[in-house]
Image: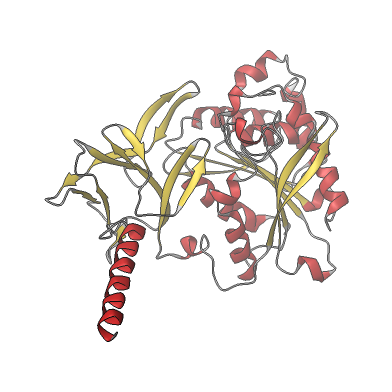
Length: 403
């Protein structure tokens, strides 16, 4: 009987061992491995591959031609195979503190790193992410031991479209019990993004929690709309369910027809009626990146008495469309800028990267603003059309609000 019990125990241990091997997939491959000096090693086990590369925003950028012009894209580096069929690449230099994204290319096929469960979606691409800490700015992207706000998904009705549409809303810690009213910051995404973009790619809820806790900005509500005006919400989260695949906004209805901009008061009215806001110009701010910068530009030009703080991040200004004057929201552009100048917004803040393909259009915009008497502040950063810049711009813009 004792021998049977011992045999049973051994069989159970073997079964558990095989189960664990199936669960974990054998010996683990560590990737990415962040070394003490902030160099990073990427690894992928692919013994039958001919060529393995890594591409990501931690590498020197390369120029990519798109229908919208030439932009900086993520660089590419080759991995080398060792005797175990594991391919490796270590960055030649330490990486600066930042939140980075990457994917692998295996014989030309883009895949995610199976050793890294941390991923984010940007339009239709899913990439792995890692973070290099070490400075105060990057710590603001992390979950820290501070009071946390609440993120909610809410639906408002758009009479313009005859449909319900979704917003992502951040309310600061203590909102539910404070009995206070708060200023509101409207934050718009870029082409191909949605109401989830600033939360997932921009880390905005963590940024807000940390800035507020450190006393670096006023407690505020942050509203993130969906700028794809023909859609209810992010892909996979509408009544179309999984038949709506994420695509660039130029493939969707109402792209650059001005309806989103002209209908924006629907969102403001809903927010003021639903949340504890201070419903006046002095306590409203708006900013947007790329396409969202164009949206911000035209919303504030058409509604000069709505926002006192305005931010354009790498704004996708389309002067071809503006000069045609065929779209009501974009017509009489100079006249609208002049009228906005008369309302004297407290802050008009523009930022763009030195290597951004949209820099010429932003410089042209600033010339038009000067011509029409509209005062602004300009910040030129390094690099190009990247989330690392847009997160940084928010860290610079938000502390200036509602002072």
